[in-house]
Image (tube, rainbow, N blue to C red; front, side, top):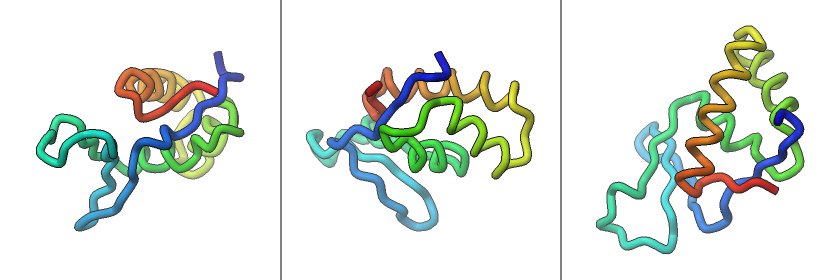
Amino acid sequence: MFEKVYRRNPDIVYREIAGEFILVPIHHQAGEADSIYVLNETGTRIWELADGKRTLADIIRMITAEFDVDDKTVADDLVEYVGEMVTSGTLQEV
């Protein structure tokens, strides 16, 4: 599980607007607000690290070091969060 690699969906645009980090699918209409995703600080960092080369284990190590959180908490949360991002189509398994 932790050796899986994910990449950002190339059909998603990532922007910082008014201090918030958002993901917007470029194939949807602008009025479809349910397809816009707002990321918190950790979610933003996961998005940035999901480059199609790093494994989940790599990302866990980096998040643990950067946010001073224990490995188990990061691993549990990351697996759930990445699953949600895959379901929403914002991340893709390589």
